[in-house]
Image (cartoon, rainbow, N blue to C red):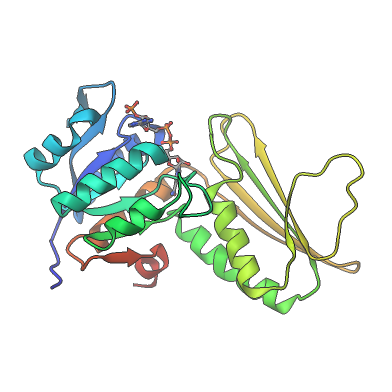
Length: 264
Ligand SMILES: NC(=O)c1ccc[n+]([C@@H]2O[C@H](COP(=O)([O-])OP(=O)(O)OC[C@H]3O[C@@H](n4cnc5c(N)ncnc54)[C@H](OP(=O)(O)O)[C@@H]3O)[C@@H](O)[C@H]2O)c1
């Protein structure tokens, strides 16, 4: 049965992080999602008048604040545990954390989130910006229109980012491989590294405070096409995650995609 809460009660994990704080700030200006609390390992107190509770008492926090949906921007090892507790407590999960291993059934993969989605609605996205959703569609069109062109993907992020290549770059690569004939991904090049036909070059740059930039280069000997997305600030991601939270709360258990939120 589907219910549509007028304003989803949101719990934020990773609340003291760059994204968690932005989610709290952005939610204050919305009426479809209301942050009721955050959790943190270290801080207890308040962020912008929102109570922040200890992460190691997560199950107690779930009972006390009774959220409709978790919005998680933390680290994979923490995210998996938060989501498993939410599945027990019947709380929907929007997960923006990246860095889960690519093989979802390997240790560190998304399997724990998939398992939770049998009991509650779960939406994981490595990028909550609408511009990146549009980019993914544009990439799909370009790769199918330009067979045989060389493809290189370059992403740039701030110096604090842990995972490489970014979750968004991996989503772009998956999309490229789903529509074209490629032999594999080559991460960086060094030494005697002649480009082989069919390889996709992948490059990750880390510097300063760059919010997130992804460029897909398609080229043959006669022309180049470059598709680029640049995040101006973190509000695009926070807003997208809150759109997803309002959309997901009250839905049936299952595994959902951010493209479904954007399509509506
Ligand atoms: N999907 C998207 O659109 C999108 C956009 C931007 C970033 N991201 C991803 O979101 C994640 C967070 O990014 P960020 O820039 O906000 O990182 P950040 O500033 O480092 O914040 C992460 C927060 O997670 C919490 N945390 C870290 N380790 C933890 C642990 N073991 N247990 C419990 N909590 C832990 C920390 O809070 P406490 O120390 O207070 O517990 C920390 O403040 C990253 O994976 C990033 O790649 C996704």
